Image (cartoon, rainbow, N blue to C red; front, side, top):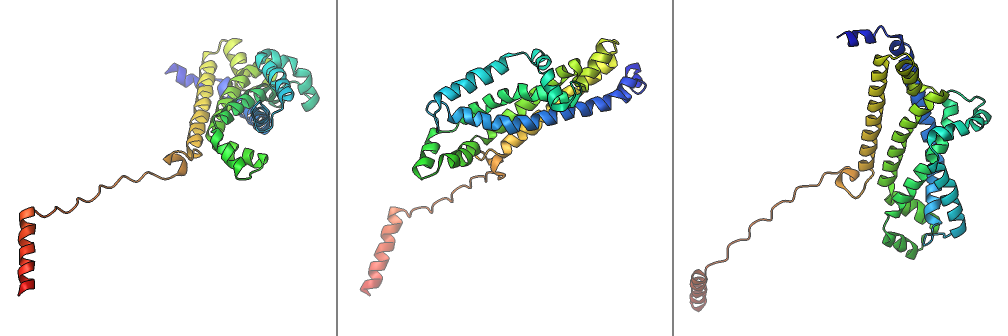
Length: 266
């Protein structure tokens, strides 16, 4: 009871917590927008330019895939963010705050999301692509009307995974000046040994991740046209076929035939 009553008297919760939540949402929102804006075309390019793709570009694909995407993904985020502080200052005019941290967050998650997009596009059946090409569709039409539409559930799931990753990255960004819930947990929970702030911060981060995951799973099911849930219609229960009329017995049929013959003779 003392723990709960102390929450309303703790300045780290009553004053600093609302601002920290807004900063975290700001970082996730900005970074998620630019990740989707840049990562989706990058993932499509990785897929179509691969050997056997719609537009094979072996050398360019190896440069983008192996050098840009893989190297960026292999650098730990904490090191990457410190390295990109000059770039963040050049773009935003400052090296601290949620807007400056969004630069590093975007650069860290764009290759991650692009690789997830590439994997989602690989799951599209090659027969559908061949059928679209045979019917005269251009390569751009195949990408926009076949690849992206068929892979839409996987793309939504990829975006959901990326947003969840961004929440964790934003907490790490707070330790190096990004703000948000990470900075609040570090300043109050670590430096001041405030257990209340630390517990509340963890609960909010877990709740935020759960909300993003549940919303992403629901959206993925809604856009999946291969299931009844995706089309918004419920499957109608199969109705039993009516029982066939019983065939007349052989003796009864013979007697009926005799009566008809007698009537015809009369």
